[in-house]
Image 1 (cartoon, each protein chain N blue to C red):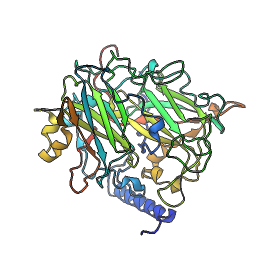
Image 2: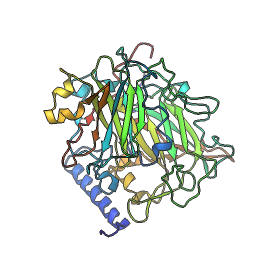
Image 3: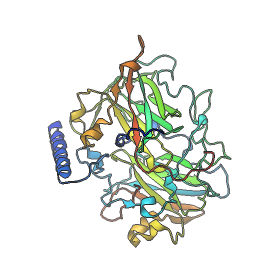
Image 4: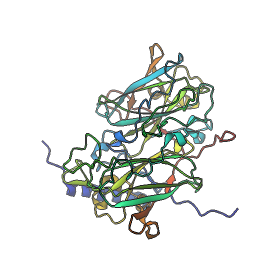
Length: 192
Length: 260
């Protein structure tokens, strides 16, 4: 096989801007769990800026293993009606592992999913108007002893990645894009 | 009450940022492919960027099993036959200059990114988005929504047919205008390779004034956001052609399941 020409440098990121709302979110984008599944957990919270104000034009994406630990995902998160083009949503049995949710006018998002198999966390990406390059973070659910990332963080930083149980299989996870004078900034991740 | 921010103020800040980056390079600093999230000429960035350094995770931090080294998949059920042609989504054709935009999606080793979802959205030919919050006085086009999707081919290629978007006014400062652009959203095999960006058109006179494009302070990196006009892609009596290749940053998937 002949050597390929070296690839040019990476294409730079640019902000998602204010008008992604009619293009990227899709109906039931945050509902990864099949409707009515008894193991469903809810992860919800608010996205805040450095003034402590909610961010109403952020977009959250989630990626996770299936409950059995498999990481191959499945197509169909945006399953479409070939007649009208409308989004039908996931078909139920196939666990796609992917979700996408725009924050509400009050900066709130909610994910209904099944517990990830093999790891104690969901992977999140945050996009927003004003954010020139998206941010990776993780939602840790409950005990995560021995996790290499959590183990590397000071307690106050570590706490920003651990969701707060609210009972009834509901977990609260806020994203703070910047320290607001009171609340610690969320830990964001680099993968190189 | 503060005085309104002028283009002169913003242009001076853009020049300062470029000078600071040039000095950083001259001092032996690494070239920067992506914008600094703390780029003050783009005012909305001021309260929306982390001030703490990012924390290393994944293989480089001793965790080759990180979930982010795998990623979501999409397939034929996620796109319809008309999704890639933004001029055929309504009863009649949209107004504007019909264009084809095509290119390849590669990973940073130069390998094609196959079968992955590419999404675009854009303003219409008058520079208006089909979004309730874009209320500036330019006409909506009942025959144009401005949303497209496709899956990349075996060679990483993608293709959209659309119309050239207009310049778009915004409120970063007085008389702020965005150069014509198409928003792109891309996936690679790993979640670490996710990219949302914007494609620009060659020779746009607004480039120098725009803090979002200029947030990429590296000259060669910034050029990579600008498509090339390609006459061989133009179709007689029909459309003009632009070529834009995209290279996804971030470590590629290490986790490959048999048969994938």
